[in-house]
Image (tube, rainbow, N blue to C red; front, side, top):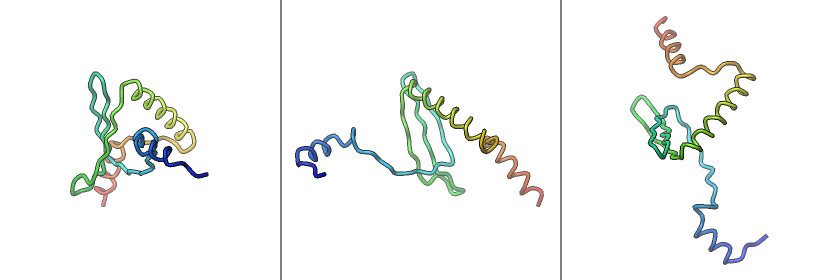
Length: 102
């Protein structure tokens, strides 16, 4: 189905509202900052030489709480199928102990 020029122009003007971005970003580190009005999550790609890249998400506290609830449900389902997900500190300690044994 073809779009007419008016529809294309409208979407170009309002692409902020209507365009979907399917770009993916792998993060292995994050920071969270809060204020009275916002939560900011800074997802980072960390390497031994420093950080390669980062992506920030800023949201209001209500949406941040909804994200927390969705993540808790996702973790529950994941752990029911695959077992406990270890936190990053536990994994780092296990890796340190593994390499210290050599």
